[in-house]
Image (cartoon, rainbow, N blue to C red; front, side, top):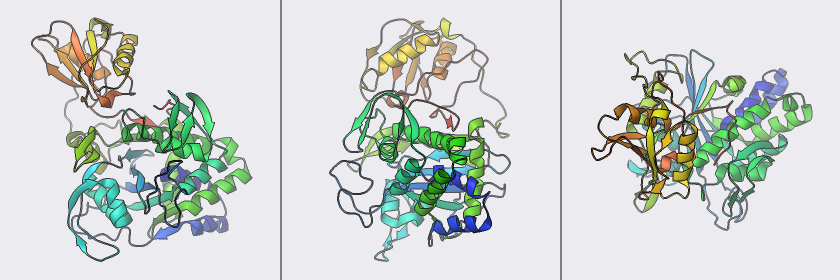
Amino acid sequence: MAVVTSVTVLVAATAGYALLMKYDGNIGRIAGVLDLPGEGRPADDDTGARTLLLVGSDSREGLEAGQGAQGRGDEFVTGQRADTIILAHLFGDSEQAQLVSIPRDTYVTIPQYRDPETGAVVEERQGKINSSFFDGGAPLLVATVEQLSGVRVDHYVQIDFAGFQAMVDTLGGVEVCLSEPAFDRDSGIDLPAGRQVVGGEQALAFVRQRKGLPRGDIDRIRRQQQFMGAVIRKTLSAGTLLNPLRLNSFLDAVTDSLQVDEGTDIGDLRDLALRMRGASAGQVTFSTVPVADPAARRGGESVVLVDEVAAEQLFDRLRRDLAPGEPDPQVSAEPEPLTIEPSEVQVRVFNGAGISGLGRQVSSELEERGFVMAAPPADRGRDAVRSTVRHGPGQEEAARTLAAAVPGAEVELDPSLDDTLELVVGALSAGLGAQAPAPGASPSPSAEPALTAADDICAP
């Protein structure tokens, strides 16, 4: 959760020089993080934009079993893992920032590297992005993210989870919202449904829980994004800014827990923090690398497969410094607008993911938005990842309207169908909520809906 903490530098920037240097001196530096071979690295950005790699690490160096960030479970793992990985892009020609979360189990190409302990060269391989951090530390993680995205990393920022807990506690807790009660022995979470203020221990459990969530890492990222927005709002509130004792404790806790690359100073962090001032105006956008399959199997392990086409579209916009919502000058024509009202569309919903209650949930959401349910929802398989809208001949426009209401839905012709459409709901639509399309609007892209720091939502 490193990105959240950097907002505090906004306050330090208004302090005197001596105080500013004090906080800068608290921050640790990691040698050699960005000393990567120049050949093959993405080019330097010439737009004035900058990109930071933000990492929440559950490092257990120096800890004994039962201590640290492993929650209440009995399992103990040594070493360090990048539990949260975020590519933060500060746009060069606006005050906007886009924070792209990368699931820690994302299956990627890990570049060739030299083992930091043995000095042996390890050849390029396929594996989880988290293992690059475990095996080669921050430099290999940076190289892996650059290879995945084609975006050059200018700065590296890391915070450990002990610092995360202290940060939340010095704020006096942070408000979260759950759509359902949450209990998990491994993460240690034990919270009722609804809005509530949580302290450091439960806050950490809130952002780390994965077991029991319908979409695992994808839902956990959604929680993390919700929590980052809540912390930004709390940090910028009068209750924090006008309370010297709380503010000083907060800044101490944050800067004591931060580590950055040698070339990053407090001025660079201040630039990121200044972007957070626009949080209430929605200028900080949270998004997630588009996913094709959140629970694929590779080498006997569960991994997350990237939707390569959609991911390339997202990263291409970052490389060209196009902020969310900014028109793409390379796209000559917008998608055809929708022409049919939801009230003219008959649909039957099928749960294709095997997630309990998913069909009923989506059916209810669509009905609330004006779609006509032709029959009660039913089950159809257990392995669907993406949602699919199936339609008969002549129902193409109705299918586009329905697909625009379900993020990530694909459209498929089925000549055996009549005027009633079928929606087979996949796992990626769990907990997303159906959007309300309208004639004249353009269909939404096939990707996870983005949040802004101003959005106040309830998490799965």
